[in-house]
Length: 179
Ligand SMILES: *[C@@H]1O[C@H](CO)[C@@H](O)[C@H](O)[C@H]1NC(C)=O
Ligand SMILES: *[C@@H]1O[C@H](CO)[C@@H](O)[C@H](O)[C@H]1NC(C)=O
Ligand SMILES: *[C@@H]1O[C@H](CO)[C@@H](O)[C@H](O)[C@H]1NC(C)=O
Image (cartoon, rainbow, N blue to C red; front, top):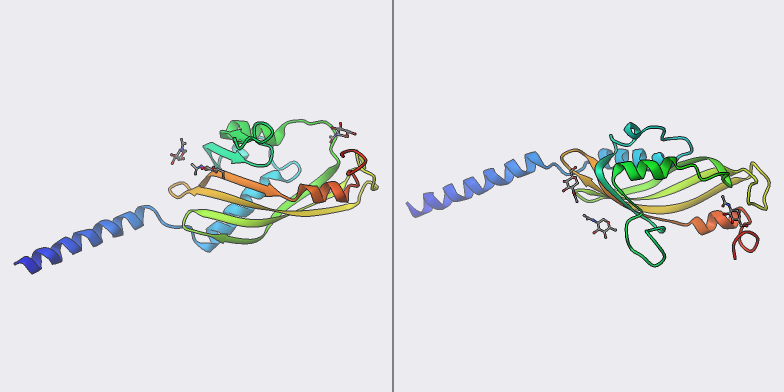
């Protein structure tokens, strides 16, 4: 009698665990790679022209953290919400030192719901605020960590760190346009 009660208890725990796994499936390798590629490509030159370009990739409450933050020495997010992210990607900041930027993952690793990837940036110099001629090839790398809402497969939190100093070096900006 006791034994069958124990077996029944185990059976219902197993059933509950199976139901949980069915509702919340961990990311597959292919999904993690696709999420990384689609997200990092949002930063390509001209990639985003309307809010709907983002909404199949990030949640409405998406938060982004990078080196800019909300002020010096502040660990606050650089953008909060898909709308603010859209505005930051499409803001007209005047002439740029580079154009035709393309960003893609170099390699991708992931846990159940978090994707970490090394990315590469490539672009060409425009000659503006640079000591190298227009058309000079540029490249540097960075690392992103993105957290994924498993029910929608959308990114709700992203942390980015890039070797932007190497871009400044390649443009010949250090000592000329920046200290
Ligand atoms: C953001 O939205 C996701 C679903 O899209 C939800 O799981 C999460 O709790 C929300 N986070 C905040 C801070 O509102
Ligand atoms: C989002 O990422 C930031 C920076 O890495 C981290 O401090 C924060 O705890 C994360 N938010 C959530 C809800 O996991
Ligand atoms: C160009 O360089 C000047 C400093 O020499 C700086 O004030 C300005 O912000 C730079 N413009 C861009 C778009 O980086």
